[in-house]
Image (cartoon, rainbow, N blue to C red):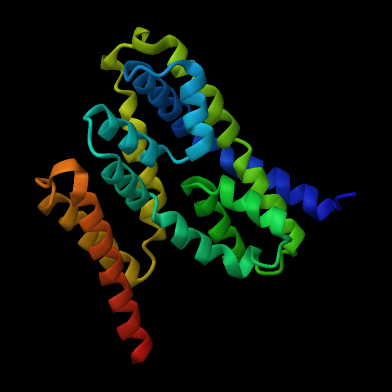
Length: 234
């Protein structure tokens, strides 16, 4: 039986994750619409979301596939966009790394930008949480995110082109990243990585097949790591 602290942590995660529905619903619907326009049916769009569960990578891969880009470039670009998940995992390892293997697998699969942003702040500010309470909080923060991502992918795929482009549903993606990245820029290394990656993405936007994203990601991570190395050496 879960103790009161575990249940409380779970429902706290649910409550704190609910505001992200304002982003998840239009973003997932838009992916469903784009999938439909690309020729996928609702089942294929849902399978895509279940298998990848990473909105930015899904949009990137779908766009490149529509442009008949070589598969190796599609995979490399999608992985580059999603490289942040490796950093997220490393960041959460001190808090969740002692969980049983199956629980770590659950966390790895459901790890997305929003529940990471909530969890990393929660675990840093409330260090007395037990391992069970941390896991419960992570699951709670996931509940308003992933199930609705799946459901509204299907909604978007079913309604397809019936949604007017004038609605501008694509606003959700930049808003989501601004909301999450802004508060996370706590150190000079974070800010340097973000600045270098942003400038590089604009500078190398002319490269074909979205290869500018690969260059920007690498330069941003290298710059952030170098700043962190120099700070640690002082």
